[in-house]
Image 1 (cartoon, rainbow, N blue to C red):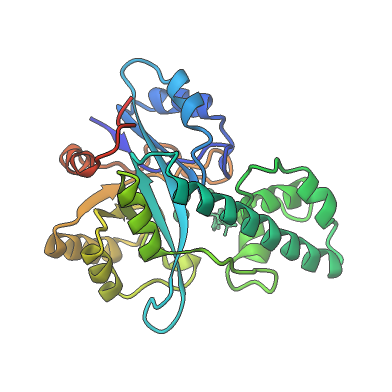
Image 2: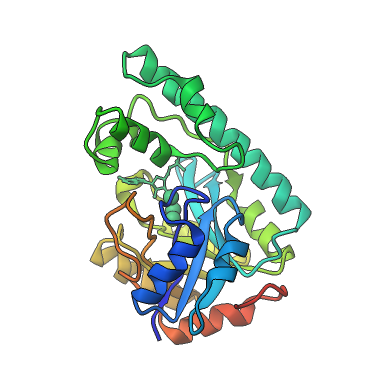
Length: 285
Ligand code: AMP
Ligand code: ZN
Ligand code: FE
Ligand code: FE
């Protein structure tokens, strides 16, 4: 059994359409794939319709959250939510708010770059993005590649869009405790995405993960391309202490990242434990 529980389609900042993603997953030899676009479930139906026989689809999303006190201040946190009711009213309201927040913040970032002479225009750029799209830095990165400012999305992040860049603007994301509560009431389960991905910016202290486990967090993503071996070991040990499920996933983004789908995988027994915790109807396809 090969299981990849974290992928993005072009309904957020990946480059494959949901249907194409299902084909890529099957070709890579996956038995189970989760679609986890940022702050949207817009790809679920198309993915489910395109799903080949023999490939199971886990409906999910990656929620943009923040830990108000990651110990020493605010820390950005991503939560992988699975198998929840996509029509849950509080969830829909929050996703709509986040999409607005994403557009506003990206407009300001592009404005700052334009003021510094980069060949980007906030109005033109934003007009080119569908209104329902959870717009993010990878979309801006691609525009910068198209304009010849940089050669790749990676270079755009390294030089201009990373969290330490003068153009970077944080968002008002969902407090992580609120997200856990919402997903629980929508019948789903939550996994902390790449908790120790240090190169993206500040990470939470381990004590924050202990608090979240008490608040209902089901698991932690241990095997992730951005995790160093020693951090994986520390996280696995912490998860064992807290009886949390551990997952492994590629965080595939099509050509917006270099990691191929199925580059990291989840153990079948861990996947079974995760599914057993979900209570909503939209379970597995
Ligand atoms: P945003 O949601 O606008 O803050 O952008 C975050 C997105 O950018 C996430 O999906 C990350 O996976 C992606 N990202 C962060 N760093 C990099 C990088 N160095 N190269 C490519 N994508 C990145
Ligand atoms: Zn992404
Ligand atoms: Fe993430
Ligand atoms: Fe992701």
